[in-house]
Length: 295
Image 1 (cartoon, one colour):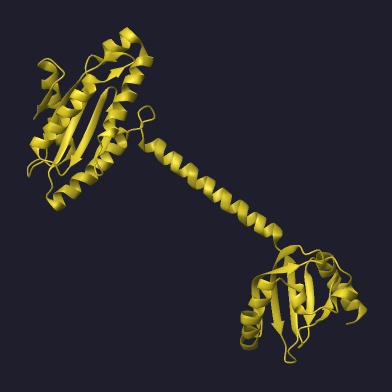
Image 2: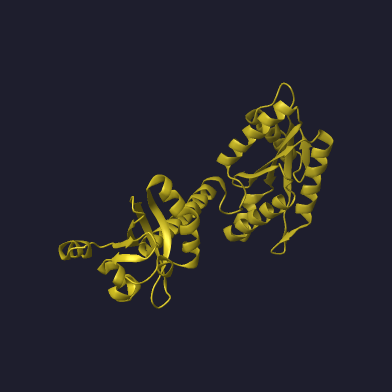
């Protein structure tokens, strides 16, 4: 190596090694000296195995050299150097092999790249979390934790399509809190919010695996029960009504009125089923409230 070539290679912000056929360091530039923390004289007397970690040496023996024999070059490998103080440094390596079995190594410290990679992973995880939060905001009612009206429409359409294909019976249940305006006026809106939250928890506690539970708006809630007949739908709704009636919210009992409709060969669209259940709900309220009526 001429002094001019040495000076040229020392000017690079990357490491350069020339390894002879015996896998001994024949040449190293100043970058490698600085990286490994030893003198150039010491480094140029080292074997290749002393430069890299044990795991890297196994990889070099089993993969790198066999590949070099066939391809004459290897690009973008990540290996680990061992400094004179035993510190491990990840590096990216490009290698070429000549006809004399001499290899030419170009290396650079990729610790910062690893750091950037970890930062990118963290940024990706944050974006995924934010995406989940945005999705929840778009689909969940913030007060009760139930599905909102938009998501109800989407889930209902999907559930009824599945019911048509599988010929399943589906019940749509509409629930309305009795005298909710009076509750708000008498006990305040904070109590009204507590009432909605408590009702939401009760509904979720009764939810089966494939059921849909949503807050339709205001004090009105909607349930879609999959694979259920009229008798069991009415039994389910009545049990729910009684549970709500017997539950105290801040020491106060509330009641609900419930309307139920079921799909059939003529009526299997959510909009139609909701109207039928809502009509049954209207009749329950008109006949004294705190009742369950089947359309």
